[in-house]
Length: 169
Image 1 (cartoon, helix red, strand yellow):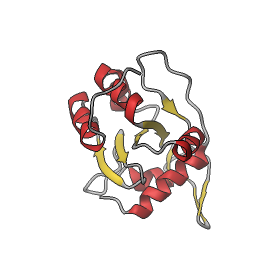
Image 2 (spheres, helix red, strand yellow):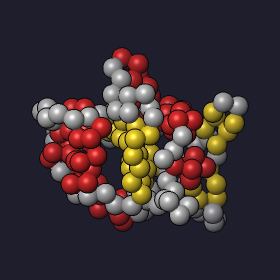
Image 3 (tube, rainbow, N blue to C red):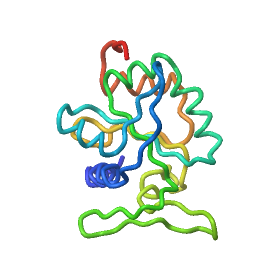
Image 4 (tube, helix red, strand yellow):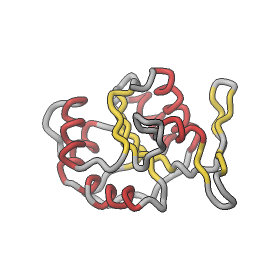
């Protein structure tokens, strides 16, 4: 389990990245930009799902095509959570509390962001994509799933953190 300090670092990362994703059609997860998350949390705190991915990861794409298109998952996420996607290959530096996290090159044309390295490790210390992290309304880590999470597993985790029926998106 990650420490509350790491939850703070995660939120700060999301606030600092400021990137955007294209709008999603009806019936799809409404992914927020990091700035939109900060604004939304100020107005109405909710649990947060963070999907850490890379654009070239086949399992990340499979998770997008299956888990994040499951009608019940989409409905629950949109009704009770804020959802944020974090590209682990982001090259923008992130400044947090006097420290700057930067992109860490692992080759001539590839690498991973330093903060994503800290968040996407499994229990053996290996970096795993995708990784799903659930935070409560106080931004404390309540669950972390390295690797592909199936819709049934995610539904159970969402129900545990924010029980109740899913409202129409």
